[in-house]
Length: 222
Image 1: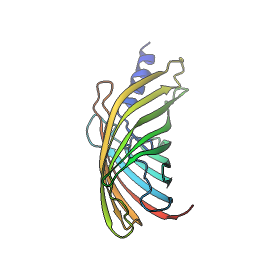
Image 2: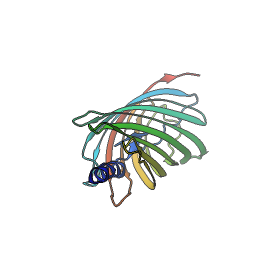
Image 3: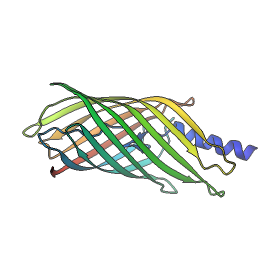
């Protein structure tokens, strides 16, 4: 019984202290990039993230991202590495559907999924799944083809997280609210950088994660 409880506690602690991006665990959630010019575009990017307080898991996380912007629907996929003694890989994807675009604001509905697995070393893996659903609210710069733009953003969301793979058959699912926010800087639509903070209170924890990233426009295509 003590062993069983210790495994459950480990799963809950990881679940509570691990926000996600694109939608990778241990990284801030960020908006799926949307089309800013007159035609869709392909892009790639990279992110570094780390805990900003003691309630978040203290690890370095690295992510690589790719995606395509569209007139209404945009998507991104991600692969990441949790830099700890086991160096776990993680995978994620997200889709954004733009609902409103005005002169100074754009609002999208965004959903995603992410997965990673932890080897317990006692005959089983713990599998972590996460499905964030929410809104991406962005200050909209309009076209940035000939200028440098600054785009603040905010993302309230519902987090649906599940841990499974216990050798005694138990699994549990958490429903929590979270929020992330940040600022993106785009330079003549060729490349840009962003910063982000993610707050995901759950199970008595209040984890905050900081992220810093860069993205590159690969050119436009139909």
